[in-house]
Length: 139
Ligand SMILES: [Zn+2]
Image 1 (tube, protein in one colour):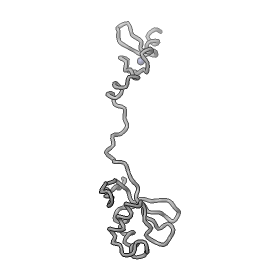
Image 2: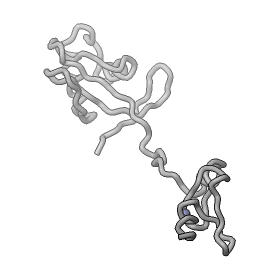
Image 3: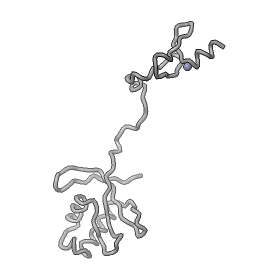
Image 4: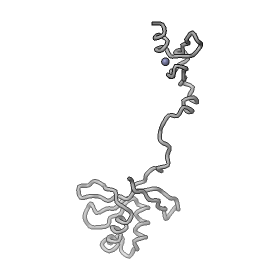
């Protein structure tokens, strides 16, 4: 389960959904909790000249603005944020209503769909069917 947080850009006031990450000594990034990120920043304001005199909140503002902040002297000692898409996004599933509104898709009485009026066949009963079903009837 992805742990996402909403942060506010201190310059623009815009909010963004993010995950916190920190860099591992092998160079890859790993997701961490906000508590963990704040703890790293708390280290950073004590260790790093660039963060000297900042509160943890100010260091966090800097992280939001810059996307990453070094919290220690090791090359990989970096905490970052990654934007995430809102989880409320509808899953991409084709619903019947969108198929109907797509003029290329024709749903037939046999239950199949064809993509051109040229492929619409009709049974003797008048029901529409696809060429496959139609040829099966002919057999
Ligand atoms: Zn069919």
